[in-house]
Amino acid sequence: MAGTGRRDNLRRIAIASQATGFILILTLETVMGDAARPWQGVTLAAMLATAAWLALVRRYRRNRQRRRREARGDV
Figure (cartoon, rainbow, N blue to C red):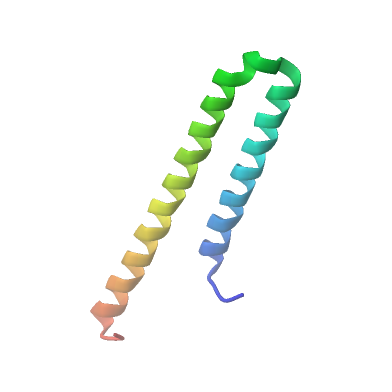
């Protein structure tokens, strides 16, 4: 798979955070039953916030790399 280490690290963080979130949601349902609903919502919101943050970081890095290439004249 082509990619830099940074992209792979972001992908690993994304996968780990989503897996952890889903496990936590299932565990909350098992342990707390219907009382887990608010905590599951909080967990889902944290998962979405993490995904959005990672998307912004990836976009920032991609744009920074593109600007550097343009400055060197590699376009």
